[in-house]
Amino acid sequence: MQLYKVLAPGPVNLHPEVQKILALPMIHHRTPEFDQILKSALTGLKKIFKTKQDCYILSSTGSGGMEALLVNTLAPGDQVLAIDSGKFGERWAEMAQVYGGEVIHMKIPWGQAVEPQDVENKLKTNPKIKLVLCQACETSSAVRHPIEALGKMIRAFPEVLFLVDGITALGAYPLPMDDWFIDGLVGGSQKAFMLPTGLSLLSFSEKAWKKIEKNPTPRFYFDIRKEKAANLKGETFFSSNVTLIRALDFVLKLIESEGLDKHFARIQTRSDFTLKFGERLGLSSFSKSPSPSLSALCVPAGIDSQELRLRLEKEHFITVMGGQDQAKGKILRIGHMGLITAQEMTELFLRIHETLTQMGAKLPIESNTLKTEMEKFWGQHG
Ligand SMILES: *Cc1c(COP(=O)(O)O)cnc(C)c1O
Image (cartoon, rainbow, N blue to C red; front, side):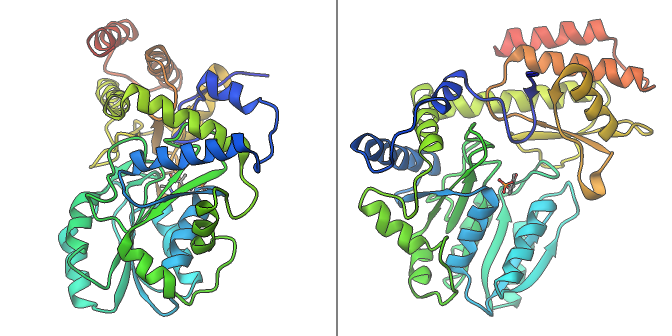
């Protein structure tokens, strides 16, 4: 089996201890041992969400968590303001439509962040809007949206709930749910939580719970009222994802023992490194508001980023992502979540240099100079 360096914006490199936990023998979810683990993970999550509310663990991918936020808070016929700045914003808007929402698409050009003032204007002119949907980080463009400003503004509208897809944000940089007045927040296991795909993590505000209780939207698997009742008995609504929850509990404890700030700082450093040495290679940031969790670098004219990423994967076993849709072929997306060493990042940039040169690009820096500068960076930031 080939070993890859997974520097994608999810899935990500796993911690060796997580790999061991994933290989442990099975235990039943109705055992005192597992009860303890579930309790510990649910409590640990509150520290990442920074909330007094309860958190929930669902066996689903991140998109399932996005759907769970919607089906519990969206009533058929509600007007929904969907901030759509890329692939994931588009997906959430489509989901809201499927569940009977009257969706107002707020299209933001790829690479740009939403202006809170524009959202406020929309809310003032459309008093029927009941939900605002936004990605904390839009992974297709590496844009970080101004969630704090949005939350503090939306809070003044008593009928409006603010739902945030934090799948490439929660656990990678600060997203304090209570302080920023987020009403529904979702994270995903294979992104900032450094696990395999399969869990979505969520929480709702008190303001959201008032609507959830009386929301007529039909729901079964993702009915958070049932999950809440089960959690109160120390169980999950359906069979618990024992394997992943055991690993989640480990990751939460790992982050806590290291310190959340330190954990965030390390991810920020990878972003600083990527943007800095991207510039040195002549690859500018596609995002006007770069997220700490991943970077999107524009490749030189005449170079196909899809070919670049395939070569990195086939020849060097390094996984990064290209662009999607309108950014296809134009950008390289590099993830900063998961277990990533300085050597891996240095190697990535040396391989990008080598491969771009082979593909005919004229780069503004020599490979040796690049290497020296990168080593100096890690000397200062290691
Ligand atoms: C990855 C991602 C998702 C989708 O998650 P899945 O686990 O693939 O369902 C949703 N939103 C954002 C911002 C993401 O990065």
